[in-house]
Length: 188
Image (cartoon, rainbow, N blue to C red; front, side):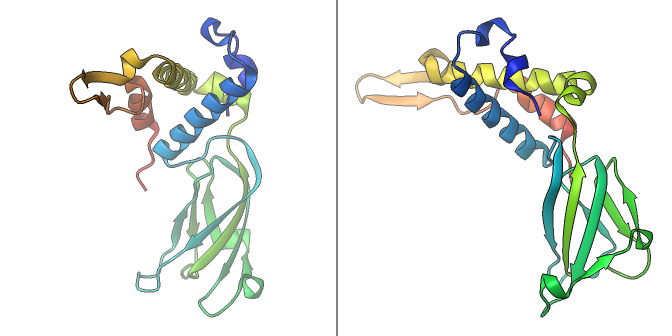
């Protein structure tokens, strides 16, 4: 999603080791993707398995975590069958909404098990050009995590010297990071 080389161009990150910066970057990206409930980085042959509960009504619509989708292949099978027994869904049997990561079955309903092999997401350059606020959020979060680890002033709100008790600040993420996550959060 975002590479270390570009992040290193910011002054406060120049003195950090590549490994330390890469770990902080990976952690911030993981938190961002978890918070938005979607994957952003460009992936080839990403596999996602959807299980539809036995008691739930039949469905025609499935949402995938990785989008926009450039290519997809779908296999579906029922209870009591294995993936090797499954049928490939022909592209004419569903509508693909690539920009939203959504597949709608045209005729009938989807089987309980669906395996999707997807190529999609955004390249590093696309993230920087189309979503500068995501880059901003990740940079805020890296700064916040590094400062929180190195400087106790930001992490500690109070300290009881009699009992030797330390109360850590409750917020795990930078407020701006959380605000930007909310703008991209997927609610399905």
